[in-house]
Length: 189
Ligand code: ADP
Image (tube, rainbow, N blue to C red; front, side, top):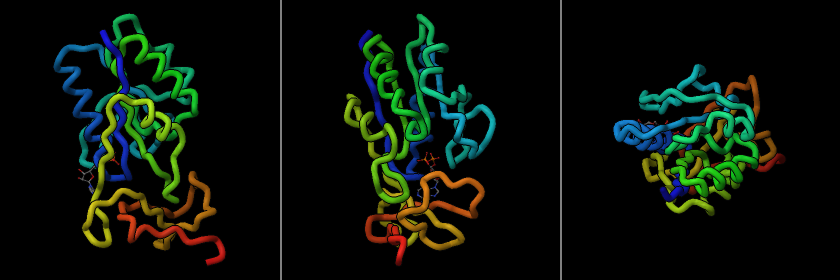
């Protein structure tokens, strides 16, 4: 069997989880041995599932570090799915490469840009390495045009450039925005 990497990227609400779940469910229907991972940091919906914003879900293994993944891979594993791949350490890049080299179909889904519009974690490298790339768009919540960016709002206001990517305990929300309506004020603005 030939292994390869498929990457699904885009902003929040672009349907990355939906698309990942769709592909993995089809692999399960084909009776292939499928493993699904997500970072333990992603507590959006708690529990063991990967869940899309439209409600579809699939059982996943939560891991804290990329090195834990190999412990779950078995001789007969055929397909590996990883959701929210941007939250993993850079070791995930080598893991995906090794799995694909070993004949496994690896499907990764994650944010390609952070709220600042800058490359997010290991996703950009995985997009480069992947045989197949799908960059999805959402709908801009301001104008209704296709949205490729994620707007971060803190107490309803655009988050500033220097706000940390991961901020625990703040009243924050995210929405999909196009290039024109994506705002990242500099700190002194
Ligand atoms: P992602 O994994 O990329 O965050 P999900 O698969 O979880 O995306 O959610 C996609 C779903 O989110 C869509 O099918 C739609 O029902 C819903 N949705 C909510 N807001 C938006 C938006 N602004 N643009 C597109 N879809 C949206």
